[in-house]
Length: 256
Ligand SMILES: NC(=O)c1ccc[n+]([C@@H]2O[C@H](COP(=O)([O-])OP(=O)(O)OC[C@H]3O[C@@H](n4cnc5c(N)ncnc54)[C@H](O)[C@@H]3O)[C@@H](O)[C@H]2O)c1
Image (cartoon, helix red, strand yellow):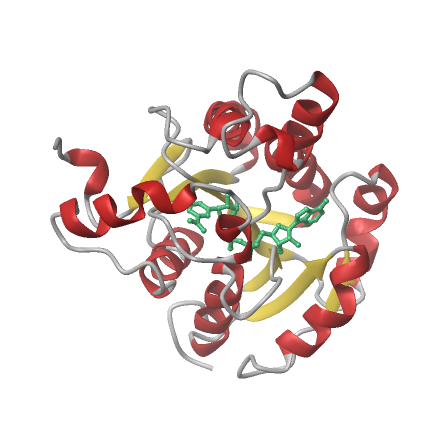
């Protein structure tokens, strides 16, 4: 098999529908020669089984609910049932109770905020640590953020969770670098996935993104973000870690 990802073994979390950013990454990765193991959680497993059939190649599915410590403990063995190690792992997971999004910033309680941060931030560390015994030198842990340097309408505690994710990315790079493991984030522009559509008011800045991005931006094309993910998962960023690469049409770089 030839291609950018020939021979690479990837664990891809976060596929929910064929609009998921993770689905686009899995599809491109397989097209470029990678072997993909997917994970999903609880009530989404049977839906994701069906979605995986739309990939070019079969991909085994393992269960990982990032709020279940026992799933992280079992993860290396579950992955080893399908591949003998990993060259990359994609964290494409975010979620928070409705109270933490869509204008609830001042009223959301700690329990709900803690849930959002556990799923969207702390799980990045948990996933990296669970996969570490499987990861070879030169491999990459990769996550997805939404520019946390600004306060967006409606994004609320998810914005705080993403700021934490961006910091966790740097700490993971510090701790895993000596083992030869790279740790990076892709900062994607807005895309109409289930996660985005579940944030009331997220559409308030969608049009500005389309209008203002120097390169333009499509709200329904996951491929630019997925290609950026694949590039970082490949061997072509060998000395890049703790980094955040924007795949956002250039929006972050320009003012009004
Ligand atoms: N869509 C956007 O506009 C956008 C922009 C930038 C970054 N992102 C980020 O991209 C990532 C993927 O989101 P998406 O937009 O593809 O949406 P999506 O809804 O397709 O994916 C979110 C995933 O999180 C998973 N998830 C939620 N709770 C979980 C749990 N407890 N355990 C395991 N998995 C759980 C869901 O099953 C789903 O697969 C997220 O980190 C999101 O914040 C999205």
